[in-house]
Image (cartoon, rainbow, N blue to C red; front, side, top):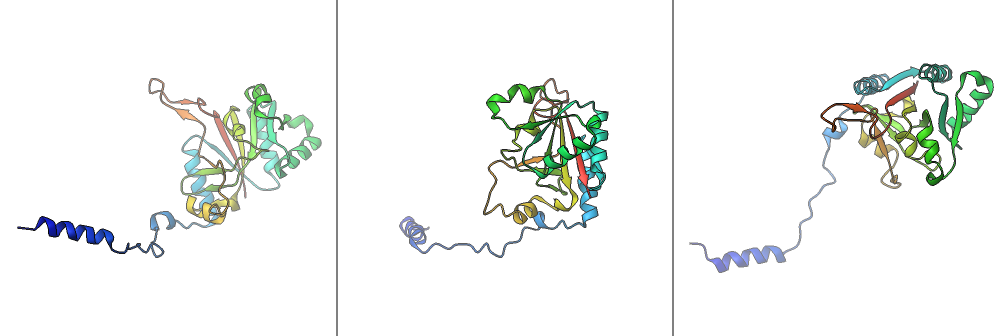
Length: 222
């Protein structure tokens, strides 16, 4: 029969002994790292994943994205569109409006605090934003809200148009965080968006736009 006193002493001795810190530096995470696609494969993977959840992904070039944008706003009867100030996208939109004002909806810049912008946000037809990048593995956009392009721009307007450059599509989320150095500058509010808002909470019927935009359109620039 084991001696209870001896067993107790063994346990206490182990607790008093030096702590052994496991070596985690050599650990591998193949589940998070094994996906490696070419640029075109990443584009196709992201497009396939996003379209599966009712996102419109429209591929275009740097020279043709303006025509694609004009086609989208015409098709969806967008008369007013919200955009963030002090961005490269804002400058391009203003230049486009000067060149073809009859083909561009009224540009409304987001420049007031939320307390003064509620009527604007809930009365706008659509919003257009930039993106930090995309994730091919999950078919997601990465948005990093800023004072110029706050979270509400992708949440409240019924149509969200997102501009994504193909060369900013990452294989997976780990690669995105590593490349963007989130370990040293973690965003206060990073968003991963794959499609329009949807819920089936009400009588188990799928409904779009309850908790966010009803339509998500991605202008994928290659």
